[in-house]
Every structure is written in C-alpha cells, then in structure tokens.
Length: 197
Image 1 (tube, rainbow, N blue to C red):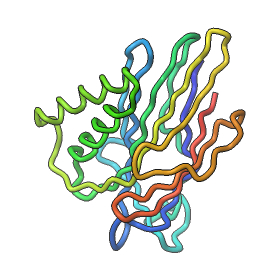
Image 2: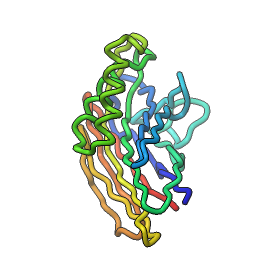
Image 3: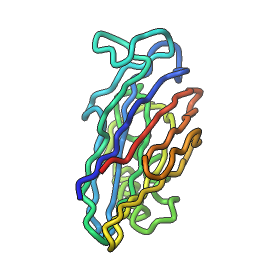
C-alpha cells in the first residue's frame, strides 16, 4: 500500500537569527524488512527561505512565512510491515550536513526502536569517518512517526516529539494528523503533518 507523509504547513513565527532562515528538512526511515531511505527536502543543496514577518505563503520570489502542501516522503507498507520515520527540521548556515548527521544519529540511537538504532549507528559511523561537509547549521526540532500495516490490512500510525519539539494538537486517529511546535536554537516554528493513504 502506497502511503505518504504530507507537510500541510510549516510556519515561521521566529527565526533562529536575524533575517531569513534557510530551512531544509531531512527525512530518514527504516522498515521492518531492513529497507532504509534518507532524503533532503526540498532537494540536495537546496533550502526554503523563511521569515517571521508579513511575507506571503509559498513565496517563490523571496522569503515565505509558511510553506504548504509538500510531500516529505512516500513509502510502500505491505501487510505485516512497519516503517519508523524520523523528520529533522534544520536551518542552513554553512550549507553542509555534519550537524544534521550528528543530530540524526543521536536521535535514531535514542528512539528505542531496534531498526532506528541501526540506522543511527550507521549514520554516526559515516559522520565519524568524515562523510560530511563542514557546517554551522542550526537545529530547529525533530519528531518520529511509526506506521504499520497489520495483517488484517489496517494501517495505523503514531507520532511523537523527539527533541526541541512538542505536540500542540493531535487530531482524531482517523485523520492521521498532528501539529508540532519547534523551538530549537531560539526559533519558533509550527508544523502540521498528515500521514495519507
């Protein structure tokens, strides 16, 4: 069954520093069969300029106050399978990945989920071996999502904040939606996310 993690919106109520934040998102996942993925949104070496002023949403000509309706990842969940997905919201200063990798490895190591721990260990080893670019990036916050396709064909999902994040709204289970507030490195962001079938 094809499923997607949708970011309904991510809004900047306070930047990490004076001026615009260059926001990017790292999404990492591992399924119960050992398959893994890691993607950067909006793309490798790309970011979205976000600000806490009166900028329009989804502004293609400059800073945006909010970005809306973006698919962060798409996965297949076969009956009996599950996925653990970690989402890190980052702000790019130096244009590289070391800080994000270190944070991602630590988060995955501390999820308590064996599959995620393995991904975290691999990411940590790659970072220690120097597989990164120099950086001074800021860390806005992170959360995890677990999704499973039970043997009866019912797909279930749950969310939890990991670091520098808190749940501010959990919608009824049928809607599969959650809202987080992120406050890392002096920022204040709010994001609405939805798992869709």
